[in-house]
Image 1 (cartoon, rainbow, N blue to C red):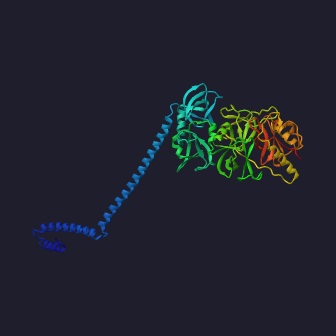
Image 2 (cartoon, rainbow, N blue to C red):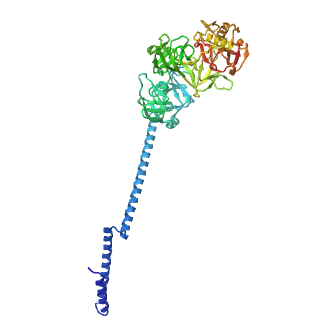
Amino acid sequence: MFDKEDYTKILDRARRKRNNKDYIRYLLIAAIVALVIGFLLLIGSLIKGRTSGSDGPGQEAVQSVEESTAEETTVDEEALRQSEEARLEQERQEKEAADRQAVVDSYENLGIVQVSGYLRVRKSPDPRGDIIGKMLENSVCDILGQEGDWYHIRSGQVEGYISSQYVITGDEARALALEQVKLRAVVTGITSEETVRIRQTPEINPENIVAQALLDERYEVVDQQEGWVQTTSGYISSDYVEVRYALNEARKMDVKAMAINQYSNLLISKVTSYLNIRSSPKDEGNANVIGKLPSKAAAEILGTEDGWYKIHSGNITGYVTTDSQFTATGDEARALAMESASLMAIVKIDKLNVRTSPVIKDDNIWTQISKEERYLVVPGSETDGWIQIELDAGDEDGLSDGAYISTEEKYVDVRYALTEAIKFSPLEEQANQQASRRNQIVNFALQYVGNPYVWGGTSLTRGADCSGFVQSVMRNFGISLPRTSREQAKVGRAINSSEMRPGDLIFYANSSGTINHVAMYIGNGQIVHAASRRSGIRISTWNYRSPARIRNVID
């Protein structure tokens, strides 16, 4: 192999023979040799650098290429990942849109209800027809036909008639319905009692039941957790629902069985007046009485302890006797409950306006009612958006005024229900003679609770109207009162609610402002009065409707 020394010799020989004819030839050979040597040196350098691990120019070039390739690979992988995520998200959105559209397309002739509150489904195309279901705002149906102003519809498990004026149809209905397709818990399974309980918390507890659900009812999903689905109405066991995209449909109207199935272990009071509820499982006279179960009232049995049932009813948890003379359980309780369950208006706000006619006007507000009470609905009085409730019977003609409340504002729940416990603590006799006398009057009046209301009557046992009841009680203590509530309201001294003491009289007016009802204040925010033919002599909250006048007739 040539090296630098050989190259030098050739150049020297060429210089010596510059005038020689071989000069050109030697010069060309020298150039070629120089090129070969340079190429071989470059190759040797590269080979040496790779085998020794040096950071020479060749290695830097290779590393630069490798790093560039790695960066390109990382960028490509991130781009591919993002592209895949975008593709999957697009597929999800497309599937969701297709699922929503499929829900709307499943209705052949779709109608969507537009009301504030709910629209009643009736058995026949008649405003007085039997109510068999209800449709909340934005509920949908298949329209099967039309009869005058009524649509014949099928929705969920309900087939009947609804007023056509509250229903949108056609393309407008389909566009609106598409917006209402939501993830819902659809009731697909039922318990042995043919209902599914909706609970306040995700746990099995007899005190946390807030509602009942029937087959195919739909509830909008808020969240899902192990074993439970949280809906806008409460928690439902996931064993009984299917979570899927759906529209809301009609719900069967609450029936008596629904009122009964609210209780897991039902107890019914068999007394004719009131059954004492005690704070402990023993009879301590008046000392441990915390409430009363009215006749045919319902309670949930929580347990049994030494001849006492621990119960929960209304807002009270306490103890009642297990004596079958006073309490019914099992099949006997269910049978009694079926007889006594009534359609009631259950107020959800502190005060609700009662009107003299089923229309909202400034001049037809008669009184206000309290959420502390359950109000009986007058049979056959239901119309779309309104019900008539039973407040009390006057002592002038024995009839109550037309008391109407709106059901469209979601302030009242109309359903079959059972009477439940009321909070009550008997007045203790006090050393003060005046206080003692008042307590005696009240306790004397309370022993006639449960006896009948009879218009024009004055008998504490056979029946009395409101003023007859008060007159007869006061007569027993030497206090003379006129016969009618209107005249009684003129006796004694006017006081305000902050001054009320047991034995004072509270007066209520009819829709024209005339006094026609009276009750006796018994303390603890409650009254005793002869209310109506259906209720008899009963205990109520003192402001179950707005009082017109309060009088002290004792002092």
